Image (cartoon, rainbow, N blue to C red; front, side, top):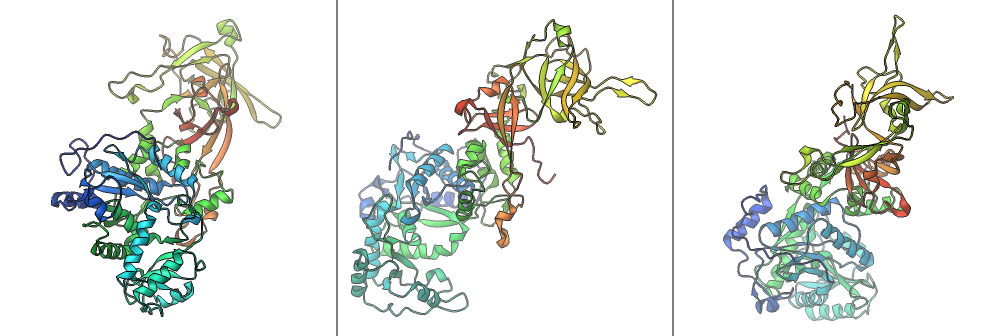
Length: 625
C-alpha cells in the first residue's frame, strides 16, 4: 500500500511532556508514557527503517521515534465514532511525545475483509487530521505483510514445545476448555512430540487437510484461571482468497497471535486497546516473552495498556448491528447522516476539529461510563460558532404579502438590496478580516415561517398577529415586527382556504425603517423574524436529521435495538433559502439563523441543480427538555 499524504514535519521535542502552551489534560496513559521516557525504557531500541525481526532491527540505527503507537483496524467494515476516539488517542499521543503512530491493517480474516474498507479507513484517518508519514517515511503497514514471519514464529513455538496441532472438533475443544469454575482438560493430542506437530503443521500449510479439521494451539496451562491461557488456538485452516496475499496461504493466524507479533515487528512501545482485551494481555506477554527468548524479537517487547471504550448515548457501535441497519434498509447506507460511522458523521456535517475536541474533552479512563450525546453536539457548536457563515432559511413557509408595497415604492416589482454580516462581529476571530456581507433582495412578497403568525396568539407571543377587536368595540392594530435586515412591518390580516388553513399573511411595510438606515429605530418592533424574499429566494430540500434512537442505551441489557429506532429521526421539507446559501459548495457548513447548523450535502447537493442541506444540530440541546 502507498499514500499520497505529504510527510509531516519530524518531531524534535525537548521535554517528555507536551510543550508549554500545548498542555494536554493528563491521564493514566500520559503518565505511563512520561514515566517510560524518564526511565529510558525504550531508549536502546534500534529501527532499521521497516518492520522486522530482532536481527533486522539490530542492523539499524537508534530509533528516531521516542515512542511508537499504532491504530490497527480490521478492514471488515466502516469505522465509527469509537474508532475516532482511538485514532485521536493513538495519533495524538505520538504527536505530543515526539513519536510515530503506525497505520496498520489487522487483515488476518480474509473472508470478511475488502479493499473498499481499506480505502474508507485510510480516508477517514486523513479526514480526521492525521497521517502516518514521519521522518520522511511512510508508516502504513498490514498484518499480511508479516505472514511469513508469523509462520516462522509458529514453527519455533512447536520446536520449543510451546505449541501443538490439535485435531479435536471445535465443540470438543470448547467442552474441554472448562469454565470459570472448572479447569480445562488436556487434549489427547497435547503430548505429541515437536517433530510430529511440526510435520502436521506443515501438512496444514500445504493444504493437505480440510478447513476446520485441525488447529495449532499454544501449550500454556489448561488449569489457568484465565481461560484465555488454556491453550488458545493460534492458527487455523481457512481456504479463502486474501485481498492482499491472494491464495498464497490456506492457513491464517488468529488475531490474538498475530497482533502482538505485529506490534513487536513494528517496534511499538505502547499498544493501546480497549478494556475487552484486558484478559488477553497475559497471552500477549507470554507470546512475546517466548519469541524474545528464542531470539526472534527484539527486547524490550511492547506493552499493552487498556482504556475504556466509548459508550455514547443514543448510539450503537456494534459492527454487526450497524450492518443490520444498512442491509435491512433502516438507513440509506453506511454514510447515512444518522449513522455513528465516521463517513456518516462527516456527511451529517461534523468537522474533524469538533471530533478531536470531543475526544480530548471526554478524556481517557480505565472505567466504563456513558458519555451523553449532547457532549459531541456541544463540541460541534463550539467549533462552528466562529466558522459557519450565517444565512436565513424558511423551513415551513407561508407567503407574506406587503399590501402597500407598490404604494410605498411606486411598483409591485420594485426590490431593494438588504445586507447582513456573514459572521457576527463577536464570531470573527481577533486579527481576522470579517467576510463579505451577505446581500439579498426584499420585495412585495416574502416567505416567513408559518409559526411566526398566529390568529389567536398564546400568552407572551411577540410575532405577527392580526388586528384585534377589543371588548369595548375598538380595534387594536396588528403586531409590529421587523423583517430581520429589512423593514418594520405591521400585520393587517391573512387569507385562508376553504378548510380554514392560512394560505397568506398580509401586512403593510413602514417606509423609512430599513435596517442600517437613520430611521431604523423610529418605530419600535416587538420582535425580529427571519424571512426569504420571493424575488430571489431559492427552493431547497432540507433534511431535518435527529438522533437515530429514542432510547439513550438502545442495545443495553439485551434490548432489541430495532425497537428503539426513532420514527422522527428524519423529516424532509421543501424550504426557501437566501441566495448566499443557494451557491454553497458541497460540505460547506452554515448557521441557519434561529434553527441551528446545516451543511450542504456532500453527495446530493448540486446534482442536477438541486440545493440540499442536512441539519447537523440545533443551536442548543433540546433532548430531555
